[in-house]
Length: 127
Image (tube, rainbow, N blue to C red; front, side, top):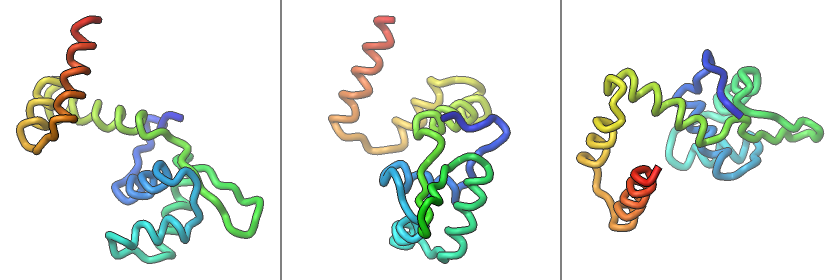
């Protein structure tokens, strides 16, 4: 479930993927209702985006019934890796350290998040 190198989801497609990653499977209406809760989105726009995403291979569609059901054909983790890798290379000159410093310096973090980060760092040191 990897995004082909020449196909990157747009911002709108990523919003739809987030809905599908959370729900698993969803109809156009379900995706539209979720998006409409925080964004002004037309139903036909959501439908068209899902059709484009299907053609790109970003989603799969079960059309065995009258109502089509969509699910993500790419994983959240692989998509994140692709985008973070590109961001590290283009914005931070290949430096993961600069990315982490920027992320940690500009956002509030809970103690639980900091403990999780510390655990990851400790695990990396052991390798």
